[in-house]
Image (cartoon, rainbow, N blue to C red; front, side, top):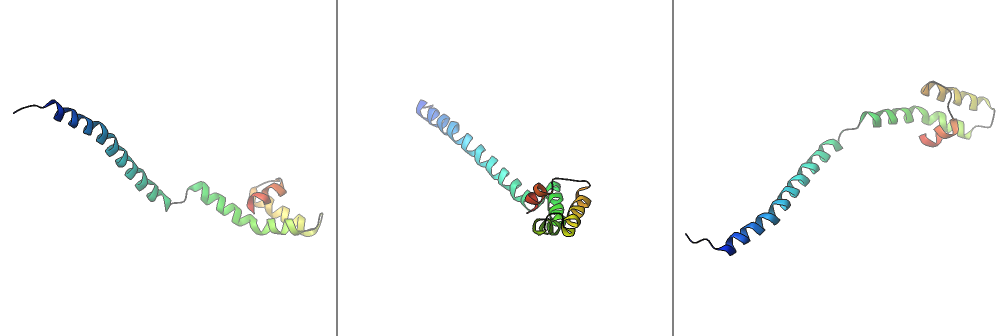
Length: 98
């Protein structure tokens, strides 16, 4: 058996270049699989935000189109207060909702 230094160097270069590429591709495949798995699930915070925005949409529309100090404005403010549990900055809340 004859050991050739060129074959050893070539094998070392292939290993040095190929191993990081192979490991990177493995990591990419694993990350992509995790992202695909989690894409179908909604997080708890997303569900809460969606629920709150859904509950406030009608009240915010009424608030934004009502006249100042009108019955409709007061009722809308009360509905917003009930959903959020206290008095808030109505204009900013409705900007966030809509």
